[in-house]
Length: 122
Image (cartoon, rainbow, N blue to C red):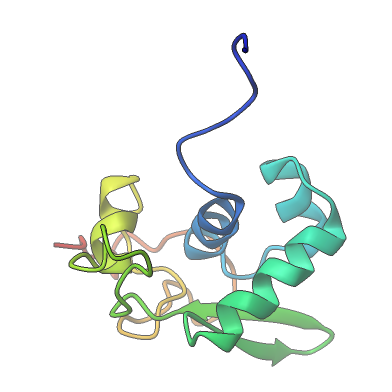
């Protein structure tokens, strides 16, 4: 039986969602590099998250920008009493960047937080 593996407590789906909650305009390539998976795996995860209504894709010129619906409950029965809002807050995403139930931080499409519009997730 085994030694210490390369596992983590959070799934790749959570890692991709966390990237997009923090920076809604990230490219698939950057997400793949951040998470440590292939671009194709990121594409499949995004399709999964869109199919469940967690992510909504918006075209901005030639790029995609994603909005996260933080009102969705977590999917596993052991965690279904919690929402994505609670998970993101626990992971330190305290601004409502790229969310369906909060405003984007920047009207100009940049991912830098605007301190005047930043609100904490409670």
